[in-house]
Length: 305
Image (cartoon, rainbow, N blue to C red):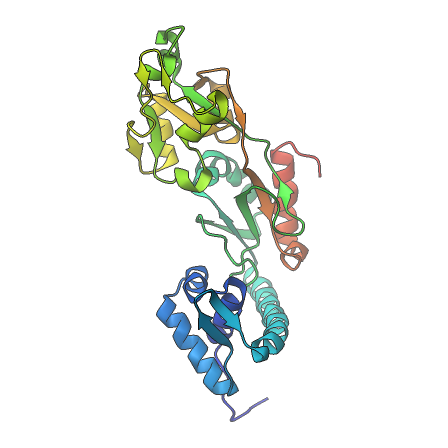
């Protein structure tokens, strides 16, 4: 079928859907990997083509016009259908592809060691892992599954993977040197730059256990005085080397605790407000490669669906 008519680009439609979801040009840009200016340009082009205004910017954020309320649901259905068709066509031609989105911590401390087993058992699936803290737009970005930290499921069909507690770990050598009292003051409290995304915060953890008392017999605790490392993996490496204490989630250090590389420094633990969930959309869950990964992950984590 040939036509001399011109149509809006797919990128402009994706920009419209992102602004619709986020009610913000800036956040839409973050979702799409574009600048706020680029998103605005895409929306302006689309509005010129449609001959109507879609969004109004106000102090409270972006508001939808009646035209947008009518158009967006229909475009959403059409774009998602188009993306599925393209994905199926690519899978048929080049083999099945599975894109996984997850955090740096889960990727390096749990998935990295086990994913080769999945790949060996499923050689026809081309697996890629995207490490990011932001919440990917699963269908729009062709992400088959995501593994996110959440306080409660925000997606239909989300599967809870962990029952994490927050605890303090250290090296066996450091544990052997700790006194019976005021032990937390005997070594630095290690931190890493991504902790704000996982809420692994020393002062909050201590406050939950001891009612906010930030001092002990030898003086106040320097919650932010310890060294800060670029990544969780760097912090854990320093902890294994005996350089201080690390505040961690049980799922991220289970292997190291079992191997004796790290030990639990104190008996106190706090159940985490955030847990890891496996997330995928209804459309993605129909794909054979997503079904295969979900089944493998459930078994690997010892879960029962």
